[in-house]
Length: 248
Ligand code: PGA
Image (cartoon, rainbow, N blue to C red; front, side, top):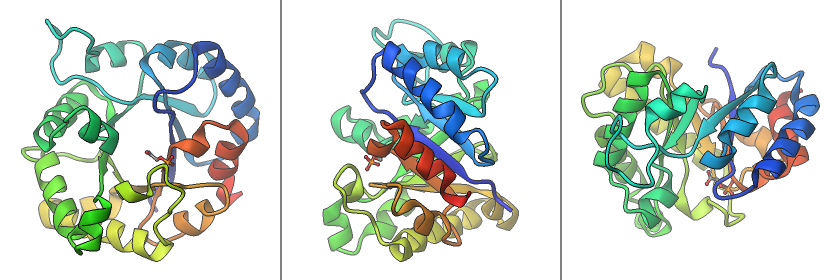
């Protein structure tokens, strides 16, 4: 059985004191969950949340990283830096980074390789735009994103994939559980073609895009959806806890 991962993506939200308060509020609400709980927070909040989450079942992740070890890259953060302070997960290739910061599939590939090299678990985002979906191109787009993201990567056992249809992010429009499952299943088939059945059966594939306490259960109980990447609803500890506890 694949484990479920419920990951929050705070995006550019929460000051350090708010982040500390959030962990304090969340911890008792989710302490009985057997799901893997991850909060991907802004760089500035990493250290505070790591300290406050010590000894709890809450794991901390970053939202981006550079693929170089060190050097003249003003404003960037390396995977080694994240690893050194105890970060476990890192989101790579979120659609907002692709859209606003021109991240390409090649950048995504370099970042995944580097993250794995230092022992971080990348949460790799893929997904189609509304236009691509309306033109029935979603599978083609996602297949292409996957092939490029995983180019020359032999072992993806520490990789988590998040299917996030761009039209469903922050819009309140969730993909139906059937549509979301169809694409996660399709992603699993693509993984099977590249890595074989054993790897595909174990691959963790999340759904993201307007997941809320009232739709989490239906989505996460689908055959191929192994949890979620939660944006807006992860900013409120009670809402996020209700999503984490969907199966309690
Ligand atoms: P949302 O964001 O839950 O606010 O739609 C999801 C994401 O961007 O990861």
